Length: 293
Image (cartoon, rainbow, N blue to C red; front, side, top):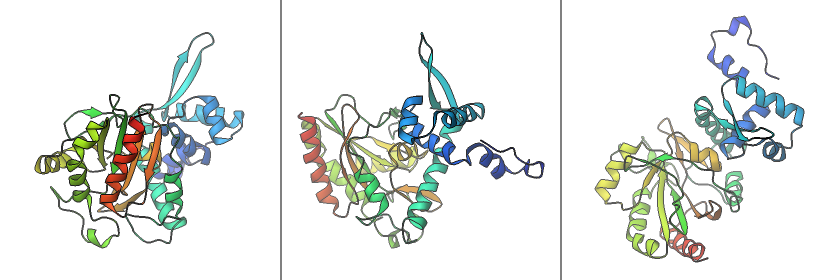
């Protein structure tokens, strides 16, 4: 169970945060609720945790304001556990922990916007087909919030990219980080192929952690016809445990392409992306196949 904060650390925010989410199970419960697991049995099955410990940790996170306990059934009453505003504010912390471990514990410590095919993060992305994307709303460059999955399309292509240089500026030494170059090219290639995607019943969404106003300036300059979504709060990154890297004091998405069907199930992934034109063509081919089912 959570430990009380000693009087000597009463004013220490790190100690106060550790008292809430410093426990192994508490952090994993935040991870799983971000991934769309909300019910007691789902959480127990996913984490292989005892009912007693799960009950204790859920009650602790509800009492701490990290989770909201929401009824979803009457007679008998059953509850779901969903992230509160305070819980959603923890997602950048969770993604930062993942990023740190990918680089320093599971990797060799090098800073990269790409990955080795044999890396832990590559295995994690390659395991995504079959996973369902929980319902999310991300800020779009159009000024509205959008679901990453287009409900009117037979398939949705989500292409994640680190950052575009416009309106800029990009962080110092940006081009010295392997895998950062090519974001504008990728957007342009999807723009040029956009009519082919829509004719096949495939929606296209670009995703980065840049702010919507930055994306808006880029979209206007480049005449981007599809929505650019901002994952600046790391909701999508946490939901799918997408690979990131830190540059310019911000978490950036590594380049990846996902095809999601109308049932929100991930059907195809590309990661790492080393040949951008080929990745766009593969996205069209895989997306078209899913949309035609």
